[in-house]
Amino acid sequence: MTFKIVVCIKQVPDTNDIKWTEHNTIQREGLDSVINPYDIGAIQLAKNFKYLIPDSEITVVTMGPNQAIDALKTAVAMGCDDAVLLSDKRFSGSDTLATAYCLSQYIKTFVPDFDLIICGQQAVDGDTAQTPSSMAQKLNIEQITNVIAIKEANNDFSVCIKDTNDYKQEIKASYPFLMAFSQRDIDIIPDINGYIKAQNKTITVLNADDIKADTDSIGIKGSPTQVRKAFRPLNNRESIRIENESVQNIADFIVNEVNKCRTADE
Ligand code: FAD
Image (cartoon, rainbow, N blue to C red; front, side, top):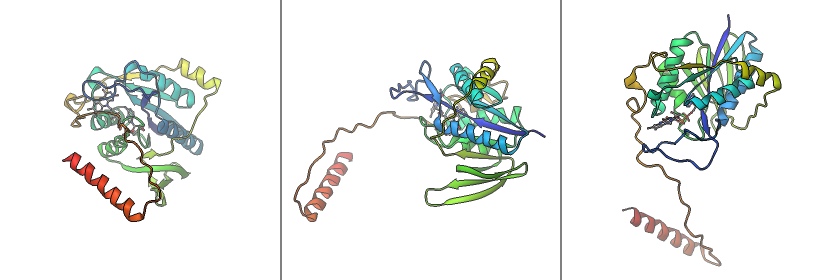
């Protein structure tokens, strides 16, 4: 039986000049975009599975505007077999909960017999790292986050290496489960055959009705997160050079500065 892998990728703005919508979310339409770096790692990991479990199939999925087709074509050129775009005006304004709901609805409706879901650990724009865990909860499956490598994989189980920053763990898991991959410095350079395959690939585009989404759970309506303010932190404080001062003087200076900040906050 085919081993079914679903890789979730997100297009992120390829710019530092981010603009905001009236809802304090990122204005994505019209921006140059790239695949989230962690998600390129997720694609590579899926390819590693394909190597270890020969009869494997990788479907890459993203929820986003029409321009996300570019990201999906790139993913196909990089080695994914199939590509799906979830796109619908009604998805617009979705927070992480609604995004995870849509992705889960797609999987429940179109790939209920999946074996493995691979996500990136986090998106470099939204940066919450909530989508994968939320999906695992909605699909009622186990999840392994912060995965940095696969030690072993076969049709019955795989052994992942998880990095917790303090120590590494080897975790053995049976399918189906979800993993979030936390390496962001992997590059995949497609070859000419990959580009030809991508050019000829028809990307499946699905809307809210196709994935049987409850319209109360998508878009702004299905998004409990309210962004009160979005801003760039300004670093406009002057640096101070302290020379030949005693430790006590430096400590007094720090306490004074902290107190000044506290008073300003009150
Ligand atoms: P993380 O949770 O950090 O991502 C981790 C991993 O989850 C990724 O590496 C990837 O594997 C997977 N993943 C994340 N997002 C997607 C995706 N879209 N498709 C497939 N896989 C994914 N974004 C819009 O594009 N349009 C909007 O209109 C919009 N409106 C928003 C409104 C509100 C109120 C808020 C709070 C956010 C909005 N966003 C919108 C942003 C969007 O909700 C998040 O970017 C998205 O939920 C993912 O969260 P994140 O960026 O923190 O990703």
